[in-house]
Length: 329
Image (tube, rainbow, N blue to C red):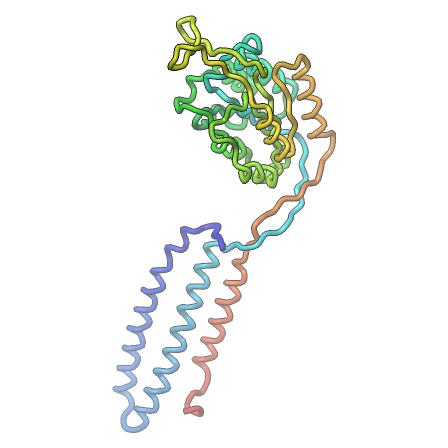
């Protein structure tokens, strides 16, 4: 069981407070009853009063607990719901690790990524677009926006300096990109991943299946060639290892293809001459001229069960108070 509003569960200590108030009220009533009655009639009346008070208190406190659970929004199980989508929303997920500075794709992997991303976005002027950059961590550079000027400005500043954490972690970056899309959007949602595939820990299958289940395909654009190249440094040289040899960085195409395959996307290579036209054509085909109907799994709300239980308990409590218990004792 999960709760939509778990903060309401903090109301449970209030049940103890209500219980203490009920106990005090019973004590006051018992004291008044003792002063009013006497003899054998008093003993019989106190027995009935104690039984009715105990049962009523249990029913009242249980009903209160049920109402608190209902407020917290309990959910369990799932069901399929139709989701009609029209139009397009794009999140550009860009690897800004140092390996993207390699110049095996001219003028460099990162510069070519800027050019392609800007060209693709310009072909969909009515679409919202956002940018997430990642290395060892991920950061939202531009939230989903329809402002092309803000997008173009951010694209021009893509560099390894934007994220300080070393390495490359897609397990963190992909969920950040997916969460950029607003819930319940009527548009098709696509993540465009630009990377050389050199992710330190690989990508969790669970992360990819979650994207697929949410209807968010990942179009992967492999940045680089199998031969790879060296990483230029700011002093005009190249990055070298501990032995003084140049570090050669290639690509991992199979990893990128797996990401696209599992999420329902497609794979491309940044070095393709017609990369922009291919991307635009496939994105147009995805969005289509009309609407498409997809199905997604949503959690089932169960709060009404707890409300009904509370009402039932309160009804029984009223019956307990109204029933002539003397006939049973």
